[in-house]
Amino acid sequence: MRTLVELVVGGVMVVLAGCNGTEVPVAASAPESVVAREAELQIFGQGIGRVRCPPDMPAGLDPPAEATLAAAFPARGVQIYVCAAPAAGGAPAWTLKAPHAILFEGFETAVIHFAGPSWQALDGSLVTGARIGSAPSPDPASIPWLLLQAATNVGPGLFADTTWIQRLETSGGVAPNTGCDDAHLGAQTLSPYRADYFFYHTAAAGQHVRQCAAKSK
Image (cartoon, rainbow, N blue to C red; front, side, top):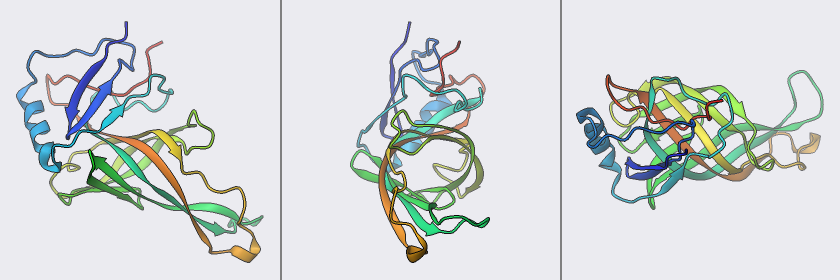
């Protein structure tokens, strides 16, 4: 039976609908380490946005078993593409240059997302990720869903101990089908998109692990 669990993480209401096919344990009172972590995340304000774990998570995007959800934010932004000729020759094509997006806590800016790919919180902490897994979006007109592993962490704060990142529930962001040819080399275009980002860190001993993961077979 699917269990619906709602929790506020970083001022964001996260709904975990038993995505791994098992009941999510809910403690009567959160461990001290969890309480401290959630209090720390409140630095971004009290606004509440809703971020959902997709009910049908694709295989290959699960974080490791020891990773637990630390924060989740909805995002709006653009994918920046440049018209470039492939290094091996061939027709010019739109090539991803960088993302640029705002991750929100309610109606307030919480995180800036930019080239790297990197995410920087308002407290100055920054994490850069490396793609580990990818799955097509259920919407063919949207960019893929991703699993990334943290490659670098800079500064104390929200992203100081981030280990894994998911980009889920994407909408839009794909490159145009036209407009890139020999006459437009170097041209840039912006493709608006939306997505939900989930940030994980390593669970403390005895801490309940919360994940957005594929159902067990």
